[in-house]
Image 1 (cartoon, rainbow, N blue to C red):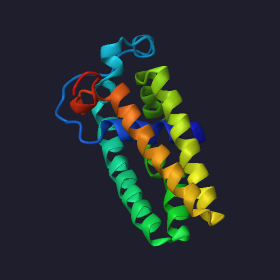
Image 2 (image 1 turned 90 degrees about the vertical axis):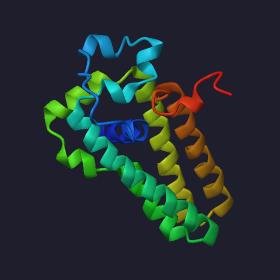
Image 3 (image 1 turned 135 degrees about the horizontal axis):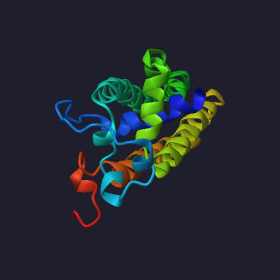
Image 4 (image 1 turned 120 degrees about the vertical axis):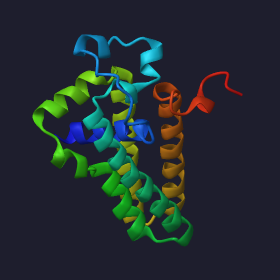
Length: 171
C-alpha cells in the first residue's frame, strides 16, 4: 500500500493541469510498460479520466505543501517543514479513495521509469522531513532543492505534453 501511495504522488505531479476532457482511454498493461518515448512523455494522457481527476486534486495538495515548505524554510520553521514534507511522503488522501481496480489501472498505465522516479522523489521527501525534525536547516534547503529538481526532471521525462518548455531542445 505504501508503494502505491508513492506512485500516486508522482503521478499527481505529472498530471496536474492536464485536461480532464481528453477522451483517450488508458492503454492495456502490456502497452503501458513498453511505452514508446512519446507515450512516456505524456503519462497523464495514459490514465483513465477518473484517476486523472483524482490525481489532479492530489497534485494541488502537493503543490500547496511545497509552497508551505518554501515559506517555512525561509522562516526557519522546522516543524512546518517536517509536517509538510512528511505529508508529501505519506500522501494518503488519494489512496483512501481508490478501489483495487483503480490501483491496478494506475500501475498498469505508468511506465517503469516513471515509477522509479516516484520512489526516488518519496525518499527525498522523507529525508527532508527527517532533516527538519533534526533542525538541520542547510540540509533541508539542499534536499528541497533536490526535490524541485526531481519534479522538473520528471516533467521533462514524462509530461512534455503538459510542460513543452521542458522538452529537450525547447530552448
